[in-house]
Length: 83
Image (cartoon, rainbow, N blue to C red; front, top):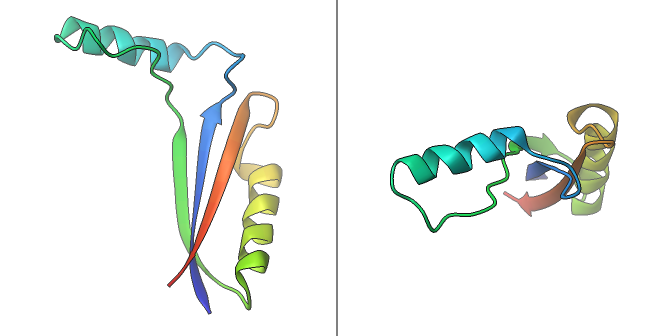
């Protein structure tokens, strides 16, 4: 069975996000004054073949911990959808 896996990786809330701050300032400069506290992260998606949703999630969890996310500075959220 095939699954679409999405991993959203964001800077931890306790840490400064200089890229988010730059985007916030840029948005304010072009007139979007009501936008506050922008956080910039990354989204990784892939299709995998697995015998169950739980195994696909477990694979994504391991990939996130081993390579995709810097656990000291980032947190992540995984979603798995059957195709």
